[in-house]
Amino acid sequence: AEVRTLRAHQFPEDQGPLAHPVRPRRYREINNFYTATVYEKGSEVVRMIRTILGPELFRAGMDLYFERHDGEAATIEDFLKVFEDVSGRDLAQFALWYHQAGTPNLTVSST
Image (cartoon, rainbow, N blue to C red; front, side, top):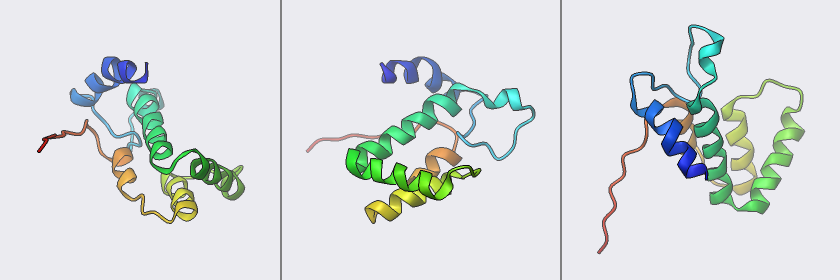
């Protein structure tokens, strides 16, 4: 169901003239901030992190996130840092998903 939602709502937005990153550097009006890209693509990036790390490390990262940042205005960098700390992995690549507009272009080949 998530893939259908992304393809139906978020991909067209990300491929069109209104494409913007999950976390825009600026906005004209706060109402423009509530889009399929912010909600759908943003939540998909969180799901990708969970898939890569596995449920146990993801849960440990979420626990650490709330321990460190409960009641604060945390950033995506803060969010990624807790998962790097619990997993020992470099997750800097995920910041690109938040800072860049557009959908990825992939080429797949089999040998």
